[in-house]
Structures are given as C-alpha cells and as structure tokens.
Image 1 (cartoon, rainbow, N blue to C red):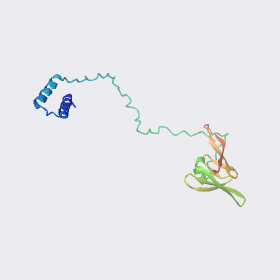
Image 2 (cartoon, helix red, strand yellow):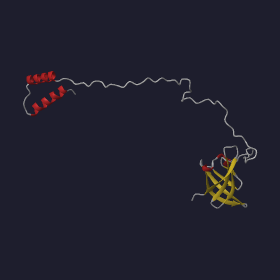
Image 3 (tube, rainbow, N blue to C red):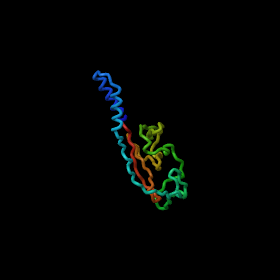
Image 4 (spheres, rainbow, N blue to C red):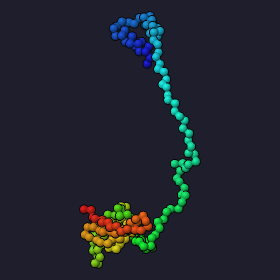
Length: 174
C-alpha cells in the first residue's frame, strides 16, 4: 500500500469520525500536496560477489547413477590344504537355509530315546532337529541339547581360506 493511499484513508477516517462532512476541495488539495512532497525511496540493488566459473572435467568418468560394470572376476578364497574346511559336497538340511539369528528355540521332547528340539523360523516355519542335525548359514551342527538350550558349533571363515570353530548357544525364551 502506498503512502498516498494510507494518508487518504486516514484523512477520510478522521473526518468521518469527527462527524464533519468532508470537503472535497480540501481533500483534493491535500492529496496533491502529499503527491508533490512525497519522494519514493527505492533501495539500490545489492552488489553480488562475483564467483569464479567452475569447469567440469569429469566427463570421462562413470556416472554415479549407472551401476558399474563387473571388470574383474570375484575373488575366491584359496583353499589351504592343512586347515579346517567345511564339507561342501554333502546335501544341505532345511534349517541351513536360515541364519542362527532367524531361529528361535520353542521346545524340546523325547521320542524313542532321542531328544528333539523345535525351532521356529522368522517366516513362521516350525522344524524339529536332534543332536548332529545341521542348521545355520555357517555349517552349524547341534552338539548338545539341554532342557532349555541348544549348543551349536559353527564354522566361520577367518579370511585366509581357513575356517574356525565357533560355539553358539540358543536358549528358550520364557
């Protein structure tokens, strides 16, 4: 809103509030005076700092939005002859499709002299296993069954082509 219209609005408001009928000639004279005496003040544009021009020189590199092409074959760990290795030629059991963290011990029972345990998987499956059964992604094998826990021995790669034994205990949640 310009200063002129503000002043005109104030003048009309003052005159109507006092109960006087506005004199049109006085208003025209007043508005003409305000127009002549009012000088608009416009700020000058700000000065912007000149930046140096950036020259892009990475046209020959791969775009970050495109998957890299496989340029070399995957590295396969060398098998050493004198260290522990898993048996990869045997048939895998159903519980070997799940990691140990995806299994929960839900119960145990005895049948025909064998102690069995029940495992529930994270996708809702229910499996039974006994001592010697295989499970987990790292060639795990059940080596001991207790009332509310199972001791599992896994083979974990050590990064040099050999495997190390690691024991894990799964307990029943109460």
